[in-house]
Image 1 (cartoon, helix red, strand yellow):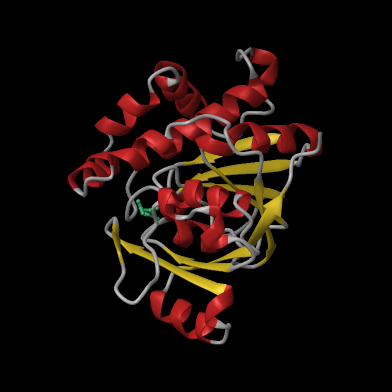
Image 2 (cartoon, protein in one colour; image 1 turned 90 degrees about the horizontal axis):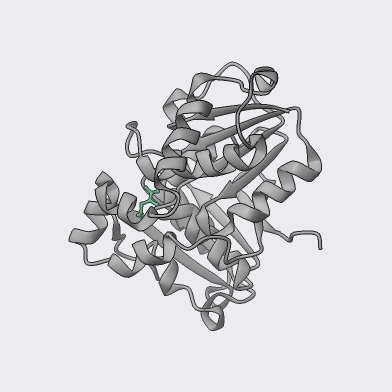
Length: 248
Ligand code: MLT
């Protein structure tokens, strides 16, 4: 395995793809995706463009769909939900297609959607994704943070660091072949410094502060939980993710 970390979709190469891309948007898109799939949604269909979400979802029976739209942290008018993972109770999402468009996370997904294997990760399901990567050993893996409108996000890189740290353990020089770029080492260092105080890290982050201003502290608390969902959101066709379950 050769592992690369890209902090934002804009920093990912455009002339080639990895065997497996793992998209990360801890606050909050990939936390929400893991949550709704674990709660029994039929699939999550992601769109970078809200108009396209509206027109594709219009073709679905309204009882079998939920439309979730977020811009700048707030719910988009005309959607059923925003992007809070706490607003997706099982009774509401079970069996439904969850149409989702967010500011950065769904754009990051679109950037790598042509890779042969695409997964999403957040802290809530990091262990399941790590187990998948350890079992399947893809030749090249990109951990892609969603960032915020082209700039770096602490929480996404910290989650990439958690995955890289679990895969590489304590770094040693015989692992040089596995480390694809310097960002892997930077992400691991960030994670190691903050691993026992993720919520505190989120409070420092610019998007964490934005969510606090929107009174979404409970979302931050939830997104900081570790390994509470045994689900591997897995792309089955471009933009459509289903619940891959961990092998026991
Ligand atoms: C995004 O895609 O930028 C987000 O997940 C923003 C949010 O809803 O907190």
